Image (cartoon, rainbow, N blue to C red; front, side, top):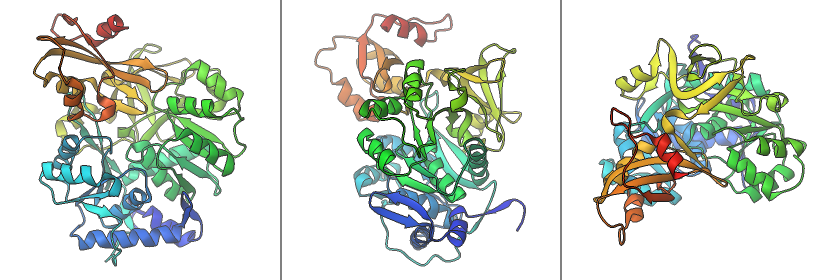
Length: 481
């Protein structure tokens, strides 16, 4: 086999560990052999629907076996997976369908209405609803080139237009290797997935489990009571959460950490000292991490042993990642990342690719610093990014929707602290007339996902600007608070 080819992860696991549990979803457990059979049947159905190697197949599904099977089946048919965020509006979804040149859209019953509307807006064929009747897969792809595209995941941009980050088989393989070297892997490991699988952190659990030959425990979403029950009644070894989810877990149950739990991987923002103290006091093995879509998930992680000595740090880079700060030693600057986990670029967007990847280094736009021991501290999210309940919200996108409303002259969008969601979206708006009787929220909900709609809107007479005319969101936020 040529050096740049790797076996399909699921096909390999089905051949060497056919009876090992691959996925646990409620009362159903699928072995690797059973999962592989179902995936081949879906890959055959995709071929019957006209999918050919090189096509792009979009999937709009909530956390479900249908999404897991599609994530494996699309590559087996030789196509590229395009994961869609179920919380987006049909207009937002339609843009991504057009931008990715999607050949076929898959959904399931829970997302069928939104999928039909998005496909109609995008001018695509009507979506197919999973599960599909299985069919014989003709010459399934059982080996992949490292630089072949596995998936395209959209990440919002500062202009309000999302960009499709291409992630290769090599990216995910390197990310899985780096995580394994850092966290360790045993055959009995079970990773609980309660974060959205359409985000890179969720998809990584699907793929890493197959790469490692471990078990994925799938939850339809995050319900703290159900997660607590699973942690104490099942031998869960790993779980991925964001800080607000960790807080809700601790609030929901007073018992110490279950003995089988080895890793609580926390991303999406730093863990506060108070929350860290609560978790560590009860024995929860909190491992803070910093990552991004363009790096196939993790970039740096902080081990439990370093948590108290380096509160607020995201740790050190994984062995498969290089990291530096674009500033003098000890000073804050932009975080630059390189290595085999980094995307080759944005789909059909050479300008954005050239701006983000320079001389082999990904310019994240995030601001951070390294301390004397090489630990990373992330000081600010890229380009005023708002992280609300684990979802990324870019102010420019929300501002564009606000400015489309007839009475809005100017708008500045930013995040404010919230005890439940970490941050919520807020806006300062300059109006052209009276606000009474306006239905701004309904207008925004027709254009934005619900988590992007500002929870707090304040009318102001003017917005602070720089000498060049750029709105100073930092000053608006300070005035708001």
